[in-house]
Image (cartoon, rainbow, N blue to C red; front, side):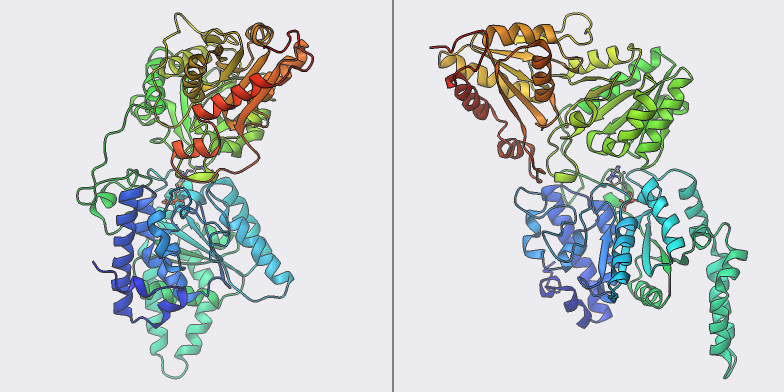
Length: 632
Ligand SMILES: Cc1ncc(C[n+]2csc(CCOP(=O)(O)OP(=O)(O)O)c2C)c(N)n1
């Protein structure tokens, strides 16, 4: 496919001169471009293939960037990027220094807001619409939200507010019946009833046809009938949830019919007050493998375009968690598992099959999921909440108020802790330690390898109170096996003994720490490498021993340096009256962009070479009031 039409589109205005036939060809070219780039770089495929016509219609009817389009989650913004002057850079999608896979206002004026975490679009759109009205400006504000994201608490809070506020605002509900996996919950069942209930749509069409045929007065009567349409809908369609909330509801409409979409969007522009357009799309549209398995092709690594085949990956921490939690649940009927719309990503799919009555997918509802766990724990169950580090940010207060304050035994399995790679700044797990470490009653640990993860899950499920086990994306390097017997809460380990400096790593940073230790050794420097395992409670005995022995501590973690393990160690030293020379190596005061994990580790100065340099630097610095004199 030569994509001759696509090459002519430099801004949304260029679309407006194309004929309907050319637009159909352009849709095919857009799908091809997305397929080629995502099959090479990985990315969110199925959602983007599903919104090709919808995105074209939005840019044909609205006038971006004057009109504001806010993409919920934002993972479906690739077509939008291709139509708004970024196609020359599109091959760099998700690569370091290249285009982001999510909307970024600093990348383009057409990206009205940063998104990445779900269910924010209606709130953002409302804020913009209120500001527009306060400023007496005139532009349209449109939120595009999926049926999965609509079930998120924030989206429902915003719907509730928007109806009451009577703002001019359009919400496009992109309903493909899927979240990442099949959508769950009452709202999703409601949408499916609306989608499949032909009563209203057919009757409305019949009414229009009959009334318009009455000579002379037909149009007037039809317009009058339009005014009472909400009451007709009320009678005809079960619930009319959105109308009850104060929205004008339009749809359901076929989201792959470009002409129909343009008509309904134009119609919506003429309504006063908030409008919700229910658009029905096929996730993965136009690519057989993605249509057949939309969940697999939701977010995918590089794959073979011809066959759709992906390369089998190495074993991951998620796999280890997945197997271990099933093994534990077999023995302990009190174990129940909760996911917030991510049964596959978190590895809970096998658990859901083996223990269907003990598995709960709450939808994109992290806050509810955590408090649900607190209720279960109060009744004697041992809930495991499997969640990505970044998405637990949504549920800080629930962790604190509903789980830790009463000291309930909920296990948080925090996947994707640390640098996650290509999804970038909205998805890195760099803040969970800072967010959780100060909460009383909570035990926090991170394994250095797979067997330690298993040991930590064993331990966590015997603790009387709440625990967090955080682990990184992807696999683990092979480290010296040191775990003989069960783990003890608050007990770390010595991976290498040494005299001059103690390097303290956490999880994946222990690999470069060990490499750095070997390099330092070859330079005649004796470095210890410590694995504290527990960020809370910290192994103060080990800390005291090595602060005194080496006088120099270098702490390396894939986490914001502010509030992480390094901070915990400084607090420990302060409590013990120790004054070793210290250097914290973590992520500085920045949002880390997208790129591959190894490149990002270099960007954040967390490689073995960085550790060697920092250790040498620390070794040449004089001591400030410690128990040992500066080494010669
Ligand atoms: C707060 C939060 N939790 C979880 C996710 C992970 N996530 C990304 S997309 C997605 C599903 C979105 O489904 P939907 O809104 O229906 O969009 P679709 O991909 O089907 O178009 C989920 C759960 C997220 N981005 N944000």
